[in-house]
Length: 187
Image 1 (cartoon, rainbow, N blue to C red):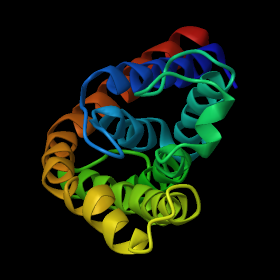
Image 2: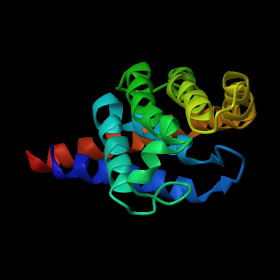
Image 3: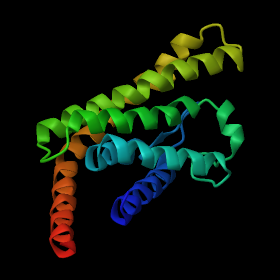
Image 4: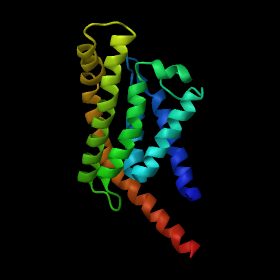
């Protein structure tokens, strides 16, 4: 991996951490801007590097740096939000695949952001239900997880997807243009 790609991976891991600070504290999972940067990483960096950026983010948080919405450390493995964090890795990969690389149209950006958001829910909601059942001993864990871990997030996630649709193609084009300039200078 070249230095530019490595820097972009680190940048998107850091942006995801910043997104954790922009939050609405809901129970049991806060609403944050993390998902915006997760999906942007996949769309702009592609599936491989976008996924790597989120794996770095999670590893840094599990090592104890307070980059998650509620802090950090290995205890997060047993938190209600861990499934969503794991979903970030899958989401960056899925969004990157759906975006397809190259010139990213608004339609592809929308499809990629919706696909990535679905990937987060696919891991996060079942993990939350399992957490509520095994840790909180809630007999209605699945219903509560669907209500508090999915339904409340859909309106905000729709807005994030629309914002990504407007921003991601421009950022991807800017990065591609800069890469082209650097490739010409390196030859």
